Length: 209
Ligand SMILES: [Zn+2]
Image (cartoon, rainbow, N blue to C red; front, side):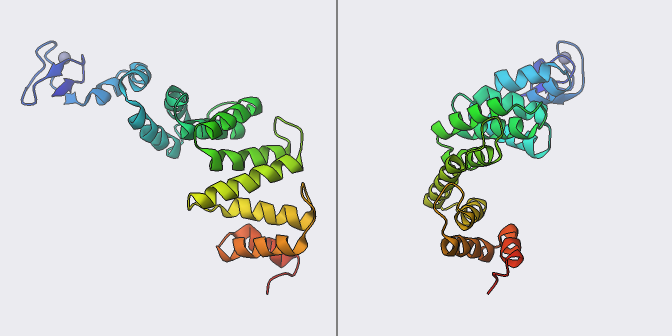
């Protein structure tokens, strides 16, 4: 089945012209929708099933088409932690929308409940460390970074950013009893895994082997 790009009628694969309007250009249903903005936005939210919507939203996100990414992430956010994590990030950074820290926090918390714990915990750590939409709280930030690393490790997706942050927090005694040796060990581990900022930090303090 193919679709007339002029009127959207379904046409047989071997049709030479549309029986409805005589049009001779054909494509997929999505291509028809695309040719008829703003019908395309409606098409994306009404016709696409949820798992396709997640993939497509990621494609829009990668292509920096944040308006369409947002549309699709919002459609599936009630059931997909990853969509919540992405929406949280878009609100945190102001990608395709105004920065909105309370919304970012709410999406990260919801995303964590829906199984995207590691990524959401990491961002919640950053927001509590930097005081974005919430008071600066190193202890809470430390706990989130610790959770992000632990959860990431259990998934085999160790996050060197979380390890780097924890190394710094131990080194400085932020939100945890100061333990310079432990901090240095974590920074070295992150650096040897190729995380540049950890190496920079070690160099700055003359702590490279
Ligand atoms: Zn037609």
